Length: 342
Image (spheres, one colour):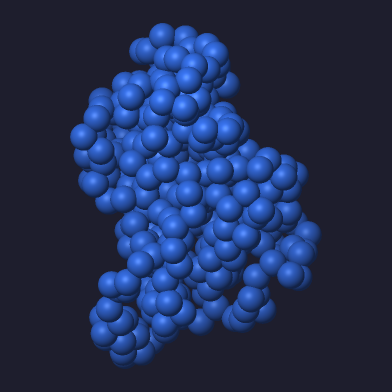
């Protein structure tokens, strides 16, 4: 997730509230907002859209570069249903009887696979090998892209060719992992109030496709403070705010990548002072093994929930999620950049 560069205006139809000024709340107002946020309970009804479950499945998926090469796409009939001959039994229910399940991976350089030893080691490529021939995984990641847009940022994913291609890819499943570049110091201060509506709009855009895909929201990996890239970002936003903010934007659970990395590479220790085999020296982009862990987490979520569109939550629940997300952004999102955003 290379730091995005400032540039030309974004499309005016992208986000609501784009012209709203960034205001640093006084302590008393912060406390009032936080108290209000605490009173807004998370929805107890069905989710607004399909997202990943909190608990990983019982089966263990192996790292893609440790398994055999991609299996043949030859299909055979099993009880009237076409399944790939080499597809593990636990994956068979997620395979359509009429077509291979199409998975669109949407994101920035972490989805693209920057710093991997080869393009075959990006997380979408490893996800393809993990899931097997019943799936067609497509990589729509693009380095430097953000969820938000504006005069100081022409790198919005909304304006990218990859976004347009992902919409035209007829996906059955969409995995969105964006936000790292939005936490860049030159972007978060100006665009933090756009982040929630922009993310919600993107989720709805994919859900409204004719293919009716199932949408998964994935946390970006944590940023390791003190590393070569960390000075470009607010690590506290990615590490401290996003784990609570993204479930509210999704109005449900998300794919928990933060804990996958933090449990193995503790955030309270400089990356250089520990043997961390999941993250490169820049502290932002994973190693081949780190990309493998992302692929395993995404694959586990896909295996648990087949690619069908679930029910929507009532409008009241969606409003509660939106309200809580905006409160988190306006309080903790501001505090995470305290002393920098003016």
